Image 1: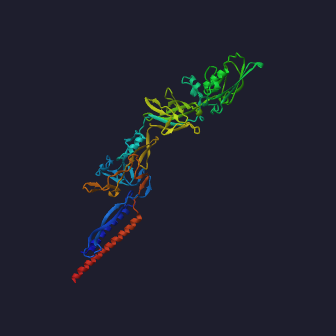
Image 2: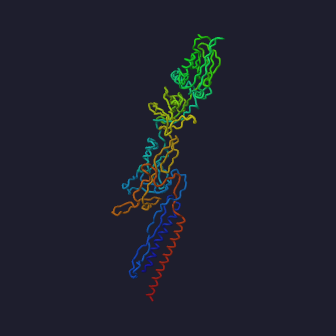
Length: 609
């Protein structure tokens, strides 16, 4: 039998294998996550020819061809956008990890990986949920990943910090992922409440009585005397601006006709004290009036002695009229802003002249917190400016605060006594606020209005007063609305109570040698086993490598795209071209086989003749 038949027969088989491989690639042109095979051939046998007597050229004779490999193409296929809730595509080096066992796990740890467990690898990211909420492939295999353990039945319990989540998401133990359809956010009780706000001392005000009237209805004289008058607003509800309008000008006339004595006084807003005819607080202004003019300035009251609301200042003559009748003229820009400018006012003993209503720089913030049943309440804080900042004098801006607890609508007050505290801003505008312990329903809440999550409270004059950020660890119950999967495969669940929290991540494994993986059908790959030089079994691909950095948690070799799928990576043009080449190769080997057959027939016929 001549070698032509053997060579052409092996060529036919080899090209038939190539045709089968390429046609299979074409058959899977629309298979999600399919990786095409690349058939490669090699010479089958070789024999050295010594009979040629050629001293220079080493001659040999090859006998046929055989399949060398049917390698996997690891290039990324095209991406197509989808609307599938769990559809994901992975670009780069690596594979999704899936398995048969609902209670199984995959641990990454170098040589400790167990290749016998029923785990597989795929690039088909068309995942969905089964009847129990398990994340599975279309073939029913469970999708493995990092589960943060926050789901208990159909309850989502957020009991870890963001830093703890990042640490746990970086671990190398993968388990089947489960997200029940009826998942609800478990109500959590607030243990802390932080807010950051801006307090603009020139934008909003409150009735002066809100600050100066005690719960028992009496006037807080200590607060009144210590009040910085630059914190006041006039009747038009605009700041008095004591630094721009500093002066009070007073003229007192005593006696009749030719015996009238005149006294002129100029008092200014400042820090020089009574000796310099300067005042800063209401107590200093009252003392200055009494010592220099004999007049009294106090909170206005009616004939019954009750405080007039809205509050204003009243000027009285306390001289007992011993020096004769007196008339008073008051002017100046600060007097105008305080609302008691008048001319030639005849003073009667112990009778007063009431100015216009006054207000105080103030703002009210509202922040939500929750009890153990997820019921919402309002923590309301009212801020009163009591000392205006002056950098030249090294004086801090000081706000007194009053905090109360209200129902969810902010209508019914639930605490008997307000929590009194303060908020300061230093010369650099940095907020200085103590933490308050609020006791409600036998439970403590740590409250801080100095800042929240990287945002400090401010006192910018170019920004309206208001809450900039609020943060509490408590939440009401919420239903799962949707989810998001970021580029690192982290799954974030969104609930209708405004909570967005991570529950885990999709597992990614990579291999040093992807060609060592073996197709297992159904778009799945498995680790193929071989024998090492020492005779021990080994994974041809090498043990799987965790797809993310165990310190920072970011994917190392690629990224995940949510609402995308990776299509087959078969190149149609090359596949059709190679199919023609394989066909030609097959035809030529068939022709060679026919020629060898004809030669044998001719040799047999020679013997017959």
